[in-house]
Image 1 (tube, rainbow, N blue to C red):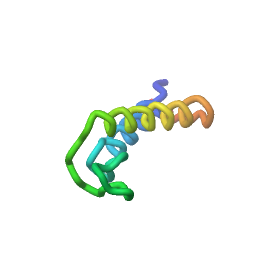
Image 2 (cartoon, one colour; image 1 turned 30 degrees about the vertical axis):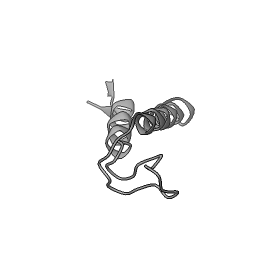
Image 3 (cartoon, rainbow, N blue to C red; image 1 turned 135 degrees about the vertical axis):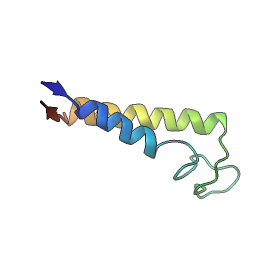
Length: 70
């Protein structure tokens, strides 16, 4: 049986945390995160990478999401 939980969680967070798709953290000069700006800086990529790793670690290790197929 294959455990598809970590794969689906990683794909979901990769899509949702793509810099500039839903929001830009940190924004380029504004206090509020910019929505759908499609302008990506190196700092934004770094922040989104940390968020991606943190959320994946929490959901895969601490929560233990498992989805078996087969």
